[in-house]
Length: 615
Image (cartoon, rainbow, N blue to C red; front, top):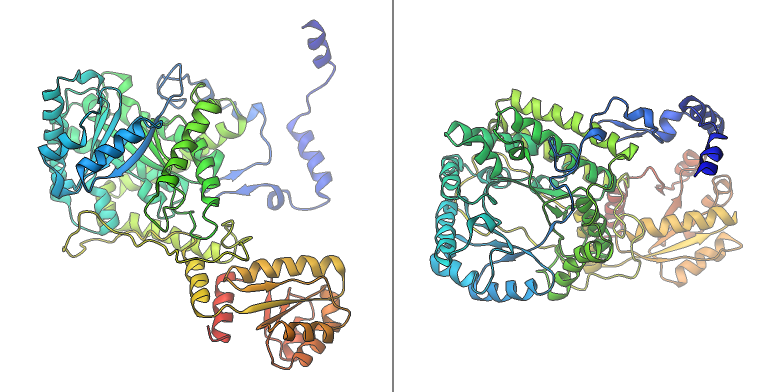
Protein backbone atom coordinates (compact mmCIF):
# COMPACT_ATOMS: atom_id res chain seq x y z
CA UNK A 1 0.00 0.00 0.00
CA UNK A 2 2.83 2.39 0.83
CA UNK A 3 4.34 1.85 -2.60
CA UNK A 4 1.00 2.59 -4.26
CA UNK A 5 0.63 5.82 -2.33
CA UNK A 6 4.12 6.88 -3.32
CA UNK A 7 3.43 5.99 -6.95
CA UNK A 8 0.30 8.11 -7.05
CA UNK A 9 2.01 11.01 -5.30
CA UNK A 10 4.49 11.24 -8.16
CA UNK A 11 1.74 12.34 -10.53
CA UNK A 12 0.09 15.71 -10.27
CA UNK A 13 -3.59 15.73 -11.21
CA UNK A 14 -4.23 18.12 -14.08
CA UNK A 15 -6.64 20.95 -13.44
CA UNK A 16 -9.84 21.50 -15.38
CA UNK A 17 -8.25 24.42 -17.18
CA UNK A 18 -5.32 22.25 -18.23
CA UNK A 19 -7.76 19.73 -19.70
CA UNK A 20 -9.58 22.51 -21.55
CA UNK A 21 -6.31 23.91 -22.88
CA UNK A 22 -5.32 20.50 -24.20
CA UNK A 23 -8.75 19.99 -25.80
CA UNK A 24 -8.54 23.35 -27.56
CA UNK A 25 -5.17 22.38 -29.04
CA UNK A 26 -6.60 19.07 -30.28
CA UNK A 27 -9.65 20.80 -31.76
CA UNK A 28 -7.33 22.91 -33.95
CA UNK A 29 -9.52 26.00 -33.78
CA UNK A 30 -12.90 24.28 -33.92
CA UNK A 31 -15.59 25.64 -31.61
CA UNK A 32 -15.55 23.72 -28.32
CA UNK A 33 -19.21 24.46 -27.60
CA UNK A 34 -20.39 23.24 -31.01
CA UNK A 35 -18.12 20.21 -31.29
CA UNK A 36 -18.10 18.73 -27.81
CA UNK A 37 -20.92 20.20 -25.71
CA UNK A 38 -24.22 18.32 -26.07
CA UNK A 39 -27.36 20.44 -25.89
CA UNK A 40 -29.98 17.97 -24.74
CA UNK A 41 -33.66 17.92 -25.63
CA UNK A 42 -34.24 18.37 -21.91
CA UNK A 43 -33.00 21.95 -22.02
CA UNK A 44 -29.52 21.76 -20.49
CA UNK A 45 -25.96 21.26 -21.68
CA UNK A 46 -23.84 18.18 -21.08
CA UNK A 47 -20.10 18.70 -20.96
CA UNK A 48 -17.63 16.25 -22.54
CA UNK A 49 -16.05 15.52 -19.15
CA UNK A 50 -16.73 16.03 -15.45
CA UNK A 51 -14.49 16.24 -12.42
CA UNK A 52 -14.95 16.00 -8.68
CA UNK A 53 -15.27 19.75 -8.28
CA UNK A 54 -18.35 19.67 -10.53
CA UNK A 55 -20.22 17.95 -7.70
CA UNK A 56 -19.10 20.37 -5.00
CA UNK A 57 -22.45 22.18 -4.84
CA UNK A 58 -24.67 19.12 -5.37
CA UNK A 59 -26.51 17.49 -2.50
CA UNK A 60 -27.32 14.19 -4.21
CA UNK A 61 -23.91 12.54 -3.54
CA UNK A 62 -24.49 12.97 0.21
CA UNK A 63 -27.72 10.94 0.20
CA UNK A 64 -27.92 7.40 1.56
CA UNK A 65 -29.97 4.46 0.24
CA UNK A 66 -33.33 4.02 1.93
CA UNK A 67 -33.24 7.45 3.56
CA UNK A 68 -34.95 10.73 2.76
CA UNK A 69 -35.00 12.10 0.06
CA UNK A 70 -34.62 8.57 -1.39
CA UNK A 71 -32.65 9.69 -4.45
CA UNK A 72 -30.59 6.52 -4.02
CA UNK A 73 -33.60 4.22 -3.81
CA UNK A 74 -36.18 3.11 -1.27
CA UNK A 75 -34.16 0.15 0.01
CA UNK A 76 -30.98 0.04 2.05
CA UNK A 77 -29.55 -3.40 1.41
CA UNK A 78 -30.81 -4.64 -1.94
CA UNK A 79 -31.84 -3.46 -5.39
CA UNK A 80 -34.55 -6.11 -5.80
CA UNK A 81 -37.46 -5.32 -8.09
CA UNK A 82 -40.58 -7.22 -9.12
CA UNK A 83 -40.48 -8.89 -12.54
CA UNK A 84 -43.93 -8.13 -13.91
CA UNK A 85 -46.00 -9.35 -16.82
CA UNK A 86 -49.39 -7.96 -17.78
CA UNK A 87 -52.35 -10.12 -18.77
CA UNK A 88 -55.47 -8.95 -20.59
CA UNK A 89 -58.36 -10.71 -18.87
CA UNK A 90 -60.88 -11.78 -21.50
CA UNK A 91 -61.63 -15.06 -19.71
CA UNK A 92 -60.77 -15.22 -15.97
CA UNK A 93 -60.20 -18.96 -16.06
CA UNK A 94 -57.78 -18.76 -18.99
CA UNK A 95 -56.06 -15.73 -17.49
CA UNK A 96 -55.59 -17.68 -14.26
CA UNK A 97 -54.00 -20.57 -16.15
CA UNK A 98 -51.61 -18.18 -17.84
CA UNK A 99 -50.78 -16.49 -14.53
CA UNK A 100 -49.97 -19.79 -12.84
CA UNK A 101 -47.82 -20.79 -15.79
CA UNK A 102 -45.70 -17.63 -15.88
CA UNK A 103 -45.32 -17.61 -12.08
CA UNK A 104 -43.31 -20.76 -12.60
CA UNK A 105 -41.16 -19.04 -15.22
CA UNK A 106 -39.68 -16.21 -13.20
CA UNK A 107 -42.55 -13.74 -12.87
CA UNK A 108 -43.37 -12.48 -9.38
CA UNK A 109 -45.67 -9.58 -10.30
CA UNK A 110 -48.91 -9.91 -12.26
CA UNK A 111 -50.84 -7.15 -13.96
CA UNK A 112 -54.50 -7.90 -14.73
CA UNK A 113 -56.44 -5.58 -17.06
CA UNK A 114 -60.08 -6.45 -16.39
CA UNK A 115 -62.88 -5.16 -18.66
CA UNK A 116 -65.81 -3.60 -16.84
CA UNK A 117 -68.10 -6.46 -17.87
CA UNK A 118 -65.96 -8.91 -15.88
CA UNK A 119 -65.78 -6.94 -12.63
CA UNK A 120 -67.49 -9.47 -10.35
CA UNK A 121 -66.86 -11.70 -7.35
CA UNK A 122 -66.87 -14.78 -9.56
CA UNK A 123 -64.30 -13.32 -11.97
CA UNK A 124 -61.87 -12.32 -9.21
CA UNK A 125 -62.16 -15.71 -7.51
CA UNK A 126 -61.51 -17.50 -10.80
CA UNK A 127 -58.67 -15.14 -11.62
CA UNK A 128 -56.83 -15.64 -8.32
CA UNK A 129 -57.48 -19.36 -7.87
CA UNK A 130 -54.39 -21.21 -6.53
CA UNK A 131 -52.31 -18.01 -6.52
CA UNK A 132 -50.60 -17.38 -3.17
CA UNK A 133 -51.26 -13.66 -3.02
CA UNK A 134 -48.91 -13.05 -0.09
CA UNK A 135 -45.82 -13.78 -2.19
CA UNK A 136 -46.90 -12.22 -5.50
CA UNK A 137 -47.24 -8.54 -6.33
CA UNK A 138 -50.73 -8.15 -7.82
CA UNK A 139 -51.99 -5.30 -9.98
CA UNK A 140 -55.61 -4.83 -11.02
CA UNK A 141 -56.99 -2.25 -13.39
CA UNK A 142 -60.39 -1.68 -14.92
CA UNK A 143 -62.54 1.19 -16.16
CA UNK A 144 -62.26 4.08 -13.66
CA UNK A 145 -66.01 4.01 -13.09
CA UNK A 146 -65.78 0.44 -11.80
CA UNK A 147 -62.54 0.74 -9.79
CA UNK A 148 -64.36 1.19 -6.45
CA UNK A 149 -66.42 -1.93 -7.06
CA UNK A 150 -63.28 -3.86 -7.99
CA UNK A 151 -61.49 -2.68 -4.83
CA UNK A 152 -64.40 -3.85 -2.67
CA UNK A 153 -64.40 -7.26 -4.36
CA UNK A 154 -60.62 -7.66 -3.98
CA UNK A 155 -60.82 -6.65 -0.31
CA UNK A 156 -63.61 -9.15 0.32
CA UNK A 157 -61.64 -11.90 -1.43
CA UNK A 158 -58.51 -11.31 0.64
CA UNK A 159 -60.58 -11.24 3.83
CA UNK A 160 -62.39 -14.43 2.88
CA UNK A 161 -59.09 -16.20 2.20
CA UNK A 162 -57.73 -15.12 5.59
CA UNK A 163 -54.63 -13.40 4.23
CA UNK A 164 -52.37 -11.34 6.47
CA UNK A 165 -53.07 -7.82 5.21
CA UNK A 166 -49.60 -6.63 6.12
CA UNK A 167 -48.04 -9.10 3.66
CA UNK A 168 -50.17 -8.31 0.63
CA UNK A 169 -48.54 -6.16 -2.05
CA UNK A 170 -51.11 -5.12 -4.61
CA UNK A 171 -52.58 -2.24 -6.61
CA UNK A 172 -56.14 -1.46 -7.62
CA UNK A 173 -55.31 1.24 -10.10
CA UNK A 174 -57.39 4.40 -10.31
CA UNK A 175 -56.30 7.07 -12.79
CA UNK A 176 -59.19 8.94 -14.44
CA UNK A 177 -56.94 11.75 -15.66
CA UNK A 178 -55.17 9.36 -18.01
CA UNK A 179 -58.49 8.82 -19.77
CA UNK A 180 -58.83 12.57 -20.28
CA UNK A 181 -55.35 12.74 -21.77
CA UNK A 182 -55.71 9.77 -24.10
CA UNK A 183 -59.37 9.98 -25.10
CA UNK A 184 -60.42 13.52 -24.24
CA UNK A 185 -63.33 12.12 -22.21
CA UNK A 186 -64.72 14.11 -19.31
CA UNK A 187 -64.35 11.74 -16.37
CA UNK A 188 -63.95 14.43 -13.72
CA UNK A 189 -67.08 13.26 -11.82
CA UNK A 190 -65.33 9.92 -11.26
CA UNK A 191 -62.48 11.60 -9.37
CA UNK A 192 -64.63 11.61 -6.24
CA UNK A 193 -64.30 7.82 -6.13
CA UNK A 194 -60.58 8.04 -5.33
CA UNK A 195 -60.86 8.79 -1.59
CA UNK A 196 -63.50 6.06 -1.25
CA UNK A 197 -61.16 3.45 -2.77
CA UNK A 198 -58.33 4.60 -0.50
CA UNK A 199 -60.62 4.12 2.51
CA UNK A 200 -61.59 0.61 1.38
CA UNK A 201 -57.93 -0.42 1.23
CA UNK A 202 -56.54 1.65 4.11
CA UNK A 203 -55.75 -1.41 6.25
CA UNK A 204 -53.30 -2.78 3.65
CA UNK A 205 -49.92 -1.10 4.25
CA UNK A 206 -48.55 -2.24 0.86
CA UNK A 207 -51.65 -1.39 -1.20
CA UNK A 208 -51.68 1.28 -3.90
CA UNK A 209 -54.69 3.01 -5.38
CA UNK A 210 -53.97 6.37 -7.00
CA UNK A 211 -51.85 5.66 -10.06
CA UNK A 212 -50.04 8.09 -12.36
CA UNK A 213 -49.50 6.67 -15.85
CA UNK A 214 -46.85 8.87 -17.41
CA UNK A 215 -45.84 5.90 -19.54
CA UNK A 216 -48.69 7.28 -21.68
CA UNK A 217 -46.69 10.45 -22.21
CA UNK A 218 -43.50 8.49 -22.84
CA UNK A 219 -45.23 6.42 -25.52
CA UNK A 220 -46.50 9.62 -27.12
CA UNK A 221 -42.93 10.89 -27.58
CA UNK A 222 -42.50 13.06 -24.47
CA UNK A 223 -38.95 14.04 -23.65
CA UNK A 224 -37.58 12.71 -20.37
CA UNK A 225 -37.89 16.04 -18.57
CA UNK A 226 -41.51 16.41 -19.72
CA UNK A 227 -42.46 12.99 -18.39
CA UNK A 228 -40.71 13.74 -15.11
CA UNK A 229 -42.17 17.21 -14.61
CA UNK A 230 -45.69 16.13 -15.48
CA UNK A 231 -45.42 13.03 -13.29
CA UNK A 232 -44.80 15.28 -10.30
CA UNK A 233 -47.70 17.59 -11.15
CA UNK A 234 -50.02 14.65 -11.88
CA UNK A 235 -49.14 12.94 -8.62
CA UNK A 236 -49.50 16.16 -6.65
CA UNK A 237 -52.96 16.68 -8.13
CA UNK A 238 -54.14 13.33 -6.76
CA UNK A 239 -52.37 13.80 -3.43
CA UNK A 240 -53.97 17.21 -2.92
CA UNK A 241 -57.41 15.83 -3.78
CA UNK A 242 -57.05 13.04 -1.24
CA UNK A 243 -55.84 15.37 1.51
CA UNK A 244 -58.64 17.83 0.73
CA UNK A 245 -61.11 14.95 1.06
CA UNK A 246 -59.88 14.32 4.61
CA UNK A 247 -57.51 11.41 3.92
CA UNK A 248 -54.49 11.32 6.23
CA UNK A 249 -51.44 12.47 4.26
CA UNK A 250 -49.36 9.43 5.24
CA UNK A 251 -52.07 7.09 3.99
CA UNK A 252 -52.64 9.14 0.84
CA UNK A 253 -48.94 9.32 -0.07
CA UNK A 254 -48.40 5.65 0.71
CA UNK A 255 -51.13 4.62 -1.71
CA UNK A 256 -49.65 6.55 -4.65
CA UNK A 257 -47.95 4.65 -7.46
CA UNK A 258 -46.22 5.95 -10.58
CA UNK A 259 -46.19 4.08 -13.88
CA UNK A 260 -43.35 5.58 -15.89
CA UNK A 261 -41.96 4.72 -19.28
CA UNK A 262 -38.29 4.20 -19.96
CA UNK A 263 -36.72 5.11 -23.30
CA UNK A 264 -33.37 4.49 -24.97
CA UNK A 265 -31.36 7.34 -23.42
CA UNK A 266 -29.47 5.02 -21.09
CA UNK A 267 -27.75 7.27 -18.54
CA UNK A 268 -30.41 9.94 -18.56
CA UNK A 269 -33.12 7.39 -17.80
CA UNK A 270 -31.14 6.18 -14.80
CA UNK A 271 -30.91 9.77 -13.66
CA UNK A 272 -34.64 10.30 -14.29
CA UNK A 273 -35.69 7.74 -11.71
CA UNK A 274 -33.23 9.14 -9.17
CA UNK A 275 -34.47 12.68 -9.77
CA UNK A 276 -38.10 11.54 -9.62
CA UNK A 277 -37.70 10.10 -6.12
CA UNK A 278 -35.78 13.18 -4.99
CA UNK A 279 -38.44 15.64 -6.14
CA UNK A 280 -41.46 13.57 -5.08
CA UNK A 281 -40.02 13.27 -1.58
CA UNK A 282 -39.70 17.05 -1.44
CA UNK A 283 -43.31 17.50 -2.57
CA UNK A 284 -44.75 15.05 -0.06
CA UNK A 285 -42.63 16.61 2.69
CA UNK A 286 -44.54 19.87 2.23
CA UNK A 287 -47.72 18.09 3.37
CA UNK A 288 -45.98 17.40 6.71
CA UNK A 289 -46.34 13.60 6.95
CA UNK A 290 -45.62 11.95 10.28
CA UNK A 291 -43.25 9.41 8.73
CA UNK A 292 -40.52 10.17 6.19
CA UNK A 293 -41.17 6.76 4.66
CA UNK A 294 -44.43 8.20 3.33
CA UNK A 295 -42.25 10.30 1.01
CA UNK A 296 -41.06 7.24 -0.89
CA UNK A 297 -42.00 7.11 -4.55
CA UNK A 298 -43.16 3.71 -5.82
CA UNK A 299 -42.37 3.34 -9.52
CA UNK A 300 -43.29 0.70 -12.07
CA UNK A 301 -41.21 1.10 -15.24
CA UNK A 302 -42.38 -0.10 -18.65
CA UNK A 303 -40.07 -0.14 -21.65
CA UNK A 304 -41.22 2.26 -24.34
CA UNK A 305 -43.25 1.43 -27.43
CA UNK A 306 -42.55 4.83 -29.02
CA UNK A 307 -39.21 3.75 -30.51
CA UNK A 308 -40.26 0.21 -31.43
CA UNK A 309 -40.39 -0.81 -35.09
CA UNK A 310 -42.27 -3.22 -37.33
CA UNK A 311 -39.32 -3.71 -39.68
CA UNK A 312 -36.16 -5.24 -38.26
CA UNK A 313 -38.24 -5.93 -35.18
CA UNK A 314 -35.56 -7.95 -33.39
CA UNK A 315 -33.71 -4.67 -32.90
CA UNK A 316 -36.53 -3.92 -30.45
CA UNK A 317 -34.85 -6.44 -28.17
CA UNK A 318 -31.73 -4.28 -28.04
CA UNK A 319 -33.79 -1.20 -27.31
CA UNK A 320 -35.82 -2.77 -24.52
CA UNK A 321 -32.76 -4.45 -23.01
CA UNK A 322 -30.88 -1.21 -22.44
CA UNK A 323 -34.13 0.36 -21.21
CA UNK A 324 -34.58 -2.46 -18.71
CA UNK A 325 -31.01 -1.94 -17.53
CA UNK A 326 -31.70 1.77 -16.99
CA UNK A 327 -34.80 0.99 -14.95
CA UNK A 328 -33.02 -1.61 -12.85
CA UNK A 329 -30.05 0.64 -12.13
CA UNK A 330 -32.53 3.42 -11.41
CA UNK A 331 -33.96 1.27 -8.57
CA UNK A 332 -37.58 0.87 -9.61
CA UNK A 333 -40.19 -1.07 -7.64
CA UNK A 334 -41.31 -3.25 -10.56
CA UNK A 335 -40.74 -3.51 -14.28
CA UNK A 336 -42.50 -4.60 -17.46
CA UNK A 337 -40.45 -5.34 -20.57
CA UNK A 338 -42.61 -4.85 -23.64
CA UNK A 339 -42.43 -7.85 -26.03
CA UNK A 340 -40.48 -7.07 -29.21
CA UNK A 341 -43.46 -7.83 -31.49
CA UNK A 342 -45.84 -5.46 -29.69
CA UNK A 343 -46.10 -2.98 -32.60
CA UNK A 344 -47.65 -5.44 -35.04
CA UNK A 345 -49.24 -8.40 -33.24
CA UNK A 346 -50.56 -9.72 -29.98
CA UNK A 347 -47.56 -10.99 -28.06
CA UNK A 348 -46.75 -14.64 -28.74
CA UNK A 349 -45.55 -17.18 -26.21
CA UNK A 350 -42.07 -16.76 -27.66
CA UNK A 351 -41.97 -12.95 -27.44
CA UNK A 352 -43.39 -13.01 -23.90
CA UNK A 353 -40.80 -15.56 -22.87
CA UNK A 354 -37.99 -13.43 -24.28
CA UNK A 355 -39.38 -10.34 -22.51
CA UNK A 356 -39.40 -12.18 -19.18
CA UNK A 357 -35.92 -13.49 -19.72
CA UNK A 358 -34.58 -10.03 -20.51
CA UNK A 359 -35.29 -9.09 -16.91
CA UNK A 360 -34.15 -12.41 -15.50
CA UNK A 361 -30.88 -12.07 -17.41
CA UNK A 362 -29.92 -8.80 -15.73
CA UNK A 363 -31.18 -10.01 -12.38
CA UNK A 364 -29.99 -13.60 -12.11
CA UNK A 365 -26.88 -13.49 -14.31
CA UNK A 366 -25.72 -9.87 -14.16
CA UNK A 367 -26.81 -9.36 -10.53
CA UNK A 368 -28.33 -5.94 -11.03
CA UNK A 369 -30.50 -6.71 -8.00
CA UNK A 370 -27.55 -6.99 -5.59
CA UNK A 371 -26.17 -3.45 -5.36
CA UNK A 372 -28.19 -0.38 -4.41
CA UNK A 373 -27.74 2.59 -6.76
CA UNK A 374 -24.42 1.56 -8.35
CA UNK A 375 -24.38 4.81 -10.33
CA UNK A 376 -24.04 6.91 -7.17
CA UNK A 377 -20.95 9.08 -7.20
CA UNK A 378 -20.63 9.01 -10.98
CA UNK A 379 -19.82 12.61 -11.83
CA UNK A 380 -21.83 12.33 -15.04
CA UNK A 381 -24.96 10.70 -13.61
CA UNK A 382 -24.99 12.92 -10.54
CA UNK A 383 -24.88 15.91 -12.88
CA UNK A 384 -27.71 14.49 -15.00
CA UNK A 385 -29.78 13.83 -11.88
CA UNK A 386 -29.39 17.40 -10.70
CA UNK A 387 -29.97 18.92 -14.15
CA UNK A 388 -33.10 16.84 -14.78
CA UNK A 389 -34.44 17.71 -11.34
CA UNK A 390 -33.88 21.41 -12.01
CA UNK A 391 -35.62 21.41 -15.39
CA UNK A 392 -38.47 19.13 -14.28
CA UNK A 393 -39.12 21.35 -11.28
CA UNK A 394 -39.62 24.28 -13.65
CA UNK A 395 -42.32 22.30 -15.47
CA UNK A 396 -43.94 21.33 -12.16
CA UNK A 397 -44.06 24.95 -11.00
CA UNK A 398 -45.46 26.10 -14.33
CA UNK A 399 -48.30 23.58 -14.09
CA UNK A 400 -49.02 24.62 -10.51
CA UNK A 401 -49.20 28.25 -11.62
CA UNK A 402 -51.82 27.22 -14.18
CA UNK A 403 -53.99 25.87 -11.38
CA UNK A 404 -52.67 22.33 -11.14
CA UNK A 405 -52.44 19.34 -13.43
CA UNK A 406 -56.18 18.75 -13.86
CA UNK A 407 -56.78 22.37 -14.81
CA UNK A 408 -53.89 22.23 -17.30
CA UNK A 409 -55.27 19.02 -18.82
CA UNK A 410 -58.72 20.58 -19.19
CA UNK A 411 -57.14 23.61 -20.83
CA UNK A 412 -55.22 21.32 -23.18
CA UNK A 413 -51.78 22.76 -22.42
CA UNK A 414 -50.32 19.38 -21.43
CA UNK A 415 -51.68 17.74 -24.57
CA UNK A 416 -50.40 20.59 -26.76
CA UNK A 417 -46.93 20.32 -25.26
CA UNK A 418 -46.67 16.54 -25.74
CA UNK A 419 -48.16 16.66 -29.23
CA UNK A 420 -45.72 19.39 -30.24
CA UNK A 421 -42.83 17.23 -29.07
CA UNK A 422 -44.22 14.28 -30.98
CA UNK A 423 -44.42 16.35 -34.16
CA UNK A 424 -40.88 17.64 -33.67
CA UNK A 425 -39.49 14.16 -33.10
CA UNK A 426 -41.23 12.83 -36.22
CA UNK A 427 -39.70 15.72 -38.13
CA UNK A 428 -36.28 14.93 -36.70
CA UNK A 429 -36.68 11.27 -37.67
CA UNK A 430 -37.66 12.31 -41.19
CA UNK A 431 -34.41 14.27 -41.43
CA UNK A 432 -32.43 11.56 -39.63
CA UNK A 433 -31.57 13.91 -36.80
CA UNK A 434 -33.02 11.16 -34.63
CA UNK A 435 -32.00 7.66 -35.65
CA UNK A 436 -34.07 4.50 -35.65
CA UNK A 437 -31.78 1.63 -36.49
CA UNK A 438 -33.30 -0.54 -39.21
CA UNK A 439 -35.90 2.07 -40.14
CA UNK A 440 -34.43 5.43 -41.13
CA UNK A 441 -30.82 4.32 -40.73
CA UNK A 442 -29.20 1.10 -42.00
CA UNK A 443 -32.42 -0.69 -43.04
CA UNK A 444 -32.32 -4.34 -43.98
CA UNK A 445 -32.24 -4.13 -47.77
CA UNK A 446 -33.93 -7.47 -48.35
CA UNK A 447 -36.54 -7.46 -45.59
CA UNK A 448 -40.21 -7.66 -46.55
CA UNK A 449 -43.17 -6.91 -44.32
CA UNK A 450 -44.65 -10.39 -44.94
CA UNK A 451 -48.07 -9.15 -43.90
CA UNK A 452 -46.89 -7.34 -40.78
CA UNK A 453 -48.69 -4.08 -40.18
CA UNK A 454 -48.90 -1.81 -37.18
CA UNK A 455 -51.69 -2.66 -34.77
CA UNK A 456 -54.50 -0.17 -34.42
CA UNK A 457 -54.89 1.38 -30.99
CA UNK A 458 -58.00 0.15 -29.19
CA UNK A 459 -59.58 0.96 -25.84
CA UNK A 460 -60.77 -1.97 -23.78
CA UNK A 461 -63.77 -0.22 -22.24
CA UNK A 462 -65.25 1.52 -25.23
CA UNK A 463 -67.45 4.59 -25.11
CA UNK A 464 -69.83 6.54 -27.28
CA UNK A 465 -69.12 9.85 -25.54
CA UNK A 466 -67.89 12.76 -27.60
CA UNK A 467 -64.47 14.08 -26.52
CA UNK A 468 -64.79 17.06 -24.21
CA UNK A 469 -61.09 17.90 -24.13
CA UNK A 470 -58.00 17.63 -26.30
CA UNK A 471 -56.17 14.31 -26.43
CA UNK A 472 -52.55 13.35 -26.96
CA UNK A 473 -51.53 11.60 -30.16
CA UNK A 474 -49.52 8.41 -29.66
CA UNK A 475 -47.83 7.69 -32.98
CA UNK A 476 -44.67 5.58 -32.96
CA UNK A 477 -41.59 7.31 -34.31
CA UNK A 478 -41.12 4.73 -37.07
CA UNK A 479 -44.73 4.80 -38.29
CA UNK A 480 -44.23 7.25 -41.17
CA UNK A 481 -41.34 5.29 -42.67
CA UNK A 482 -43.16 1.99 -42.16
CA UNK A 483 -46.29 3.25 -43.94
CA UNK A 484 -44.16 4.45 -46.85
CA UNK A 485 -42.23 1.21 -47.07
CA UNK A 486 -45.32 -0.99 -46.93
CA UNK A 487 -47.03 1.17 -49.56
CA UNK A 488 -44.01 0.77 -51.83
CA UNK A 489 -43.94 -2.96 -51.26
CA UNK A 490 -47.66 -3.36 -52.00
CA UNK A 491 -47.61 -1.12 -55.09
CA UNK A 492 -44.30 -1.39 -56.94
CA UNK A 493 -40.74 -1.89 -55.73
CA UNK A 494 -38.44 0.25 -57.89
CA UNK A 495 -34.82 -0.66 -58.55
CA UNK A 496 -32.14 1.89 -57.72
CA UNK A 497 -28.78 1.39 -59.45
CA UNK A 498 -25.55 2.93 -58.14
CA UNK A 499 -23.47 4.34 -61.00
CA UNK A 500 -20.15 4.47 -59.18
CA UNK A 501 -17.33 6.24 -60.95
CA UNK A 502 -14.20 8.25 -60.21
CA UNK A 503 -12.58 8.64 -56.78
CA UNK A 504 -12.71 5.23 -55.08
CA UNK A 505 -13.26 6.39 -51.51
CA UNK A 506 -15.94 8.94 -52.38
CA UNK A 507 -17.87 6.72 -54.76
CA UNK A 508 -17.99 3.88 -52.24
CA UNK A 509 -19.04 6.16 -49.38
CA UNK A 510 -21.76 7.82 -51.43
CA UNK A 511 -23.02 4.55 -52.83
CA UNK A 512 -23.37 3.16 -49.31
CA UNK A 513 -25.13 6.33 -48.18
CA UNK A 514 -27.48 6.22 -51.17
CA UNK A 515 -28.31 2.55 -50.70
CA UNK A 516 -29.25 3.17 -47.08
CA UNK A 517 -31.21 6.30 -48.04
CA UNK A 518 -33.32 4.62 -50.72
CA UNK A 519 -33.79 1.33 -48.89
CA UNK A 520 -35.68 3.27 -46.20
CA UNK A 521 -38.62 3.24 -48.62
CA UNK A 522 -38.15 -0.42 -49.47
CA UNK A 523 -36.43 0.18 -52.81
CA UNK A 524 -34.30 -2.57 -54.29
CA UNK A 525 -30.76 -1.23 -54.38
CA UNK A 526 -27.89 -2.44 -56.57
CA UNK A 527 -24.40 -1.35 -55.58
CA UNK A 528 -21.40 -1.63 -57.88
CA UNK A 529 -17.61 -1.63 -57.65
CA UNK A 530 -17.17 1.06 -60.27
CA UNK A 531 -17.35 1.86 -63.98
CA UNK A 532 -14.73 3.26 -66.33
CA UNK A 533 -17.17 5.47 -68.23
CA UNK A 534 -20.62 6.86 -67.54
CA UNK A 535 -21.89 5.18 -70.68
CA UNK A 536 -20.82 1.81 -69.35
CA UNK A 537 -22.59 2.54 -66.08
CA UNK A 538 -25.83 3.71 -67.70
CA UNK A 539 -25.92 0.67 -69.99
CA UNK A 540 -25.48 -1.63 -67.00
CA UNK A 541 -28.27 0.19 -65.15
CA UNK A 542 -30.68 -0.17 -68.07
CA UNK A 543 -29.78 -3.83 -68.43
CA UNK A 544 -30.68 -4.23 -64.74
CA UNK A 545 -34.02 -2.53 -65.52
CA UNK A 546 -33.28 0.25 -63.07
CA UNK A 547 -35.97 2.81 -62.30
CA UNK A 548 -33.45 5.11 -60.62
CA UNK A 549 -29.81 5.72 -61.52
CA UNK A 550 -27.74 7.30 -58.75
CA UNK A 551 -24.39 8.70 -59.81
CA UNK A 552 -21.85 8.36 -56.99
CA UNK A 553 -18.55 10.20 -57.25
CA UNK A 554 -16.64 13.09 -55.67
CA UNK A 555 -17.82 16.71 -55.72
CA UNK A 556 -15.05 17.77 -58.11
CA UNK A 557 -15.73 14.93 -60.53
CA UNK A 558 -19.48 15.59 -60.78
CA UNK A 559 -18.66 18.55 -63.02
CA UNK A 560 -17.10 16.03 -65.41
CA UNK A 561 -19.42 13.03 -65.12
CA UNK A 562 -22.93 14.11 -64.07
CA UNK A 563 -24.16 15.98 -67.15
CA UNK A 564 -22.85 13.42 -69.69
CA UNK A 565 -24.44 10.60 -67.67
CA UNK A 566 -27.74 12.50 -67.44
CA UNK A 567 -27.80 13.18 -71.17
CA UNK A 568 -26.85 9.61 -72.08
CA UNK A 569 -29.60 8.25 -69.82
CA UNK A 570 -31.97 10.52 -71.71
CA UNK A 571 -34.97 10.13 -69.42
CA UNK A 572 -35.03 6.34 -69.52
CA UNK A 573 -34.86 6.32 -65.69
CA UNK A 574 -34.86 8.87 -62.89
CA UNK A 575 -31.41 10.40 -62.46
CA UNK A 576 -30.13 11.26 -58.98
CA UNK A 577 -26.87 12.83 -57.83
CA UNK A 578 -25.50 11.58 -54.49
CA UNK A 579 -24.29 14.68 -52.68
CA UNK A 580 -24.57 18.45 -52.81
CA UNK A 581 -21.60 19.47 -54.98
CA UNK A 582 -20.45 23.04 -55.50
CA UNK A 583 -21.42 22.72 -59.14
CA UNK A 584 -25.06 21.96 -58.22
CA UNK A 585 -26.42 25.11 -59.89
CA UNK A 586 -24.72 24.17 -63.15
CA UNK A 587 -26.17 20.67 -62.91
CA UNK A 588 -29.64 22.06 -62.23
CA UNK A 589 -29.30 24.35 -65.24
CA UNK A 590 -28.65 21.22 -67.32
CA UNK A 591 -31.92 19.73 -66.07
CA UNK A 592 -30.71 17.53 -63.18
CA UNK A 593 -33.36 17.89 -60.45
CA UNK A 594 -32.70 15.18 -57.88
CA UNK A 595 -30.05 15.18 -55.15
CA UNK A 596 -29.71 13.16 -51.95
CA UNK A 597 -27.38 14.23 -49.15
CA UNK A 598 -27.17 14.48 -45.37
CA UNK A 599 -29.27 17.64 -45.20
CA UNK A 600 -32.22 16.09 -47.02
CA UNK A 601 -35.56 15.35 -45.42
CA UNK A 602 -35.35 11.64 -46.14
CA UNK A 603 -39.04 10.91 -45.70
CA UNK A 604 -40.28 13.77 -47.88
CA UNK A 605 -37.66 13.06 -50.55
CA UNK A 606 -38.71 9.42 -50.76
CA UNK A 607 -42.38 10.37 -50.92
CA UNK A 608 -41.52 12.72 -53.79
CA UNK A 609 -39.63 9.96 -55.60
CA UNK A 610 -42.56 7.59 -55.16
CA UNK A 611 -44.83 10.19 -56.71
CA UNK A 612 -42.50 10.71 -59.66
CA UNK A 613 -42.31 6.95 -60.19
CA UNK A 614 -46.08 6.60 -60.05
CA UNK A 615 -46.02 4.54 -56.86
